[in-house]
Image: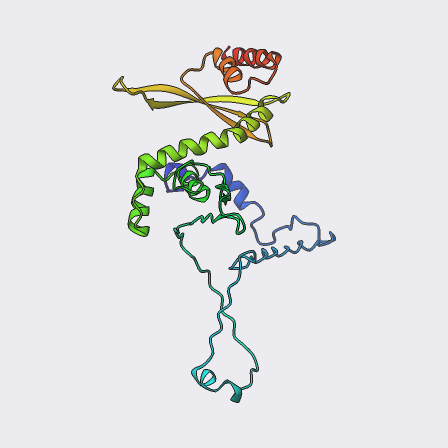
Length: 269
């Protein structure tokens, strides 16, 4: 009663507190009523324990025997073993893949032209980068957001390989060219459906020669519970989708292009 105003007790509540207080208070509950026991609280099931080490990892066994057994193994009999597991890591390694193409001439006619196997097809003609190295550079840059200058430093410090970032930038462009077939297939699958969702996000980008950043738009087209396609355009006007179909998806019909443009105009309204 003498506390703060926010904790003060209403005087009318005292009647409720003092009700039934006396020498012989009358019980409010019916003594003949059947007492229903409170329901027992169910114990929460313990979550299933997941293994500390995933089962899908490959296993490399290392057997460690005592020195006495190594000195004279025939004098000892194996009765059991203790197993201890750890998660090990083998860092990435660079190595030289040397392709050797042997030349042959016929024994009975040495004047015939020699024969040699053709060189296997390569992603970069005349380049030193293998498909696995390009895949590592592209995934490190796109999936894990490692800039090329960090990859350049990593190759030089850890592997002693001088791989300039300009060279890796050209490799990323070549890899994007080879992956464009898969990209177009994804775009065709997303945009050819009866329903998909489309949205754009403003992104500042560098424009060489202007001395300042300009505003572009990163478009995302998605079919629910299906593939997602990404596009980049410097504007968000209705002609964007028309350019999209003319440049990226020329094999689709004009009806679908007009449907997309109408949907875009409705979203702008």
